Image (cartoon, rainbow, N blue to C red; front, side):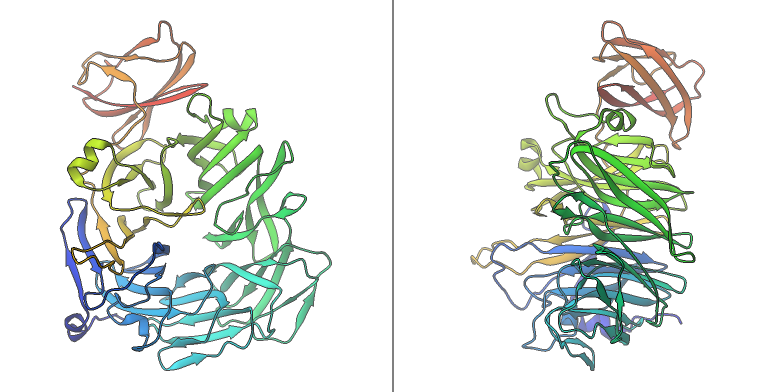
Amino acid sequence: MKKIVLPFLLLIFSFTITAQSQNFDWEIILEDTTSAHSIQGYPDKIRKIVSVDKFIYLGFYSYGGGGFLPDKGGLGQYEYNREFIAKFDIEGNFYWSRSLSLATNWDFDVQNDIIYITGIMVGDLRIGADTIVNTGIRQNILLTLNDLGNLYWHKSSPKQYSSLISQAIAVQGNNIAVGFENEKRLDIDLFDSNETIRLNDYYGNILQLYDTLGNFKQYKGFSAQRSDNSKSTINLIEKQNGHFLLKMGVHNRFSFGYSTAKDKTYSQIRAYDPTTNQWMQQLHFTSEQFFIIQEALPVMDKRYLIAGLAANPMVEIEEQFKLNNAPGSKTFKFIALLDEQGAPIWSVPIKGNRTLTDITYDPIRQEIYSSVVKRSTTEELALKGKRFKNIISRYSKFGNVIDSTIIFLDRFDSDYGAPYGPQITVSNTALYYSNPLYAFVSSLGITEIPSFHLAKLSFGMATEPELETGILFPNPASSYVILQNLNNKPTDIKIYNSQGQQIDNFSTEVKDNIIAIYINSLADGVYFLTAFSTDSIKKYKFIKK
């Protein structure tokens, strides 16, 4: 069915589509211009952004309620909620939003214009004319909305206090995979069934499989301990060629906190086959303190894109990932592409003063995007009046930066170290971006309710990529380039063209902190060069002419 935004809806709903930023092809701003509320310093958060075909779905938290939404999230005049889901098209047109009486760990996925949502109810759920009554203290729910935002079907756990806590959901084909944390009970309950399943062990995690009408199919129980008194849980499920990829972690979407057990091995990524109800793959990483995976995506053919950080990793992990850190620090941040066995194909370091908020993947171009936030420099603050800058970088499948753009922000918040800041998604090779526009104090001294914006990002007017650079000259060059300030150690050199294709790869010895690289054989054009040593990764961009 073709979706149509009725013209009279666009006249009634108060929002603006602009191209006011050089970074955006278009930008839609949702804000409440009729009322003002104090949010008492609470940050608003983008929970998740999903793009499917010609539509974009946003899940988010708003402490101030849904007053800034064109349809108020379906709430009446005196009704209030903090969790919402909204639908837009890829041209920035708003379709609908729905308020959700769910706890903060809710999740959703979209398939064939149906939105699948799971979470713990914290009150009655009202979706349009339908009301789902909350009958328990901790009641899990699995519900679906149709393309108009109306209730399609729902199933809830019958127990007043469920032993399970729903954490994540993904839909693929006729399979709905729902991940739960289990509070070490031997019986688990199902959606809309008085039946309980007796387990043969105290599993900390339960993966339940349902068909797309909510009928139970099977479950998989397992535990992933990270220390004697702490466990990891399923907090992200992605889909991959009929299988499901599970990322393990703690409640704030990070994978594994501090462990006192030295040389502890953590099972963090699991590939699940629903046809056999068995694990296809389990990836393990070893660290003395922690090895955190913020994000994990299945990409290309049986490869995994991850982003995270490690503290005091084992030497083999440090060498494999080519981790690079500040002198005296043993904490590393990175983005890496892993093969099927979990070995890094390449790894890109993230500077310590930056916080990664999201990664996404373009399957058509086989390109990778990252979003990181850092504080503005003194000069940037004076010029832009913004305290933070959001750097969106585009990488080739070989791990070199193709382009980047910078969006300056008034404010950036993180939730106990787990950022809910800018989020990005790709649809048909276009990149879409969302972030809260945080509260501010007006000239009248009123703290306004925060608003949200959704935008289509462009890279044509982008700033130069921020690279970990040394000194390269001459640039442009015709026959050779010279790299300075390198460490006197064996160094691997890789050269890529502007399409991200590796065209040269060799090793060399550095003497007197300088090397010369001859480029006579290269065709005229733009190139990227990476120099790897045991304690340094530096990147360069040069022009051959």
